[in-house]
Image (cartoon, rainbow, N blue to C red; front, side, top):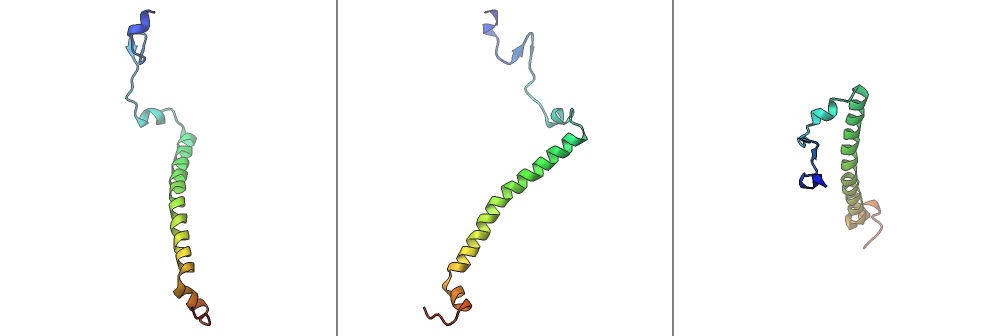
Length: 80
């Protein structure tokens, strides 16, 4: 129980570095890994954009369907 006084971030006699940069991740990646990370980034951005876009478009569509003026333009024989 001699290690009780040490913090969890120290290994042996030297502390573990906690400041890591993106360069340390990309340092060990080859071309395929970088392409896969870029594809994942693009995919996540597109996935984040699609949901709000669908909500916006569906809202506009339902507003157009529900409007009385649009119904009268489609079928003028209806007299509401």
